[in-house]
Length: 359
Image (tube, rainbow, N blue to C red):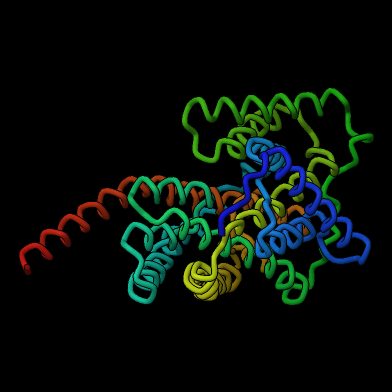
């Protein structure tokens, strides 16, 4: 549905207002993760009823740097020393991606009739923005990719806390960080500098996922050098949750009934298939003693890196283990994207030639 011609600032103000109301409502009624689920639910409802919502652009991207700093601050000599112990479960990631591709591409291609480019990039559990960009370059359906990946993230973020609490018996009240008033002021200034340097420096050199990976790398180095000793303050982590929830809901702005029936439904069914694969690989790492259940689940959950970082912090999981696996998955998906694009173009040309001969 077309959006009314309303100035962007007013649309963003409306979006912030709805997100704030959602967070407040979830907090008042004691619902879980109010700063994540509240904005997500409010903006999702607003998007579905046609409210003229608008994402916050670079502000939302900048909020992700908080998570990069949080992960980087968790990279200590002890975590680095455990990397060889993670090798066995990390080695499962290529198999995991292969299994996803073998299931996902035929599903989107044969069941829903998407072209090869859309089918491939809809299947790959990379970052939403990355998969949409690479899919567009390969000639895929940008809108379908956006909705399919938004649906994947929405469902995973919604169900993962339920699985963690009901299936693994953990709570969602792990301290996410000390209040800003309790942290050394000079370290918070260093964190801000690390976030900006990592983010913008990463963009300058073409680093994928620069808003998270850049700050993570810079902060990780500072942590290893014993310069940073704390995660970002709790207020900053809550802000990152708020922006993530808002962004997921806004992803459905302008959705049509046709897109709900086709793209969103395809995304829902594919998440069910992904959940089965994730469960198998989680069972493998737990059965062979490669990781506890919570860490294994979060490491192989097909959600976005930012969202899984938030959940790992909230439940007090081993952040280093979870992030190493997600980084490996993302790097393999991203590095394989250009190869996939060339193969897709070659296949499309061959299909076109074959059709011409038949005619």
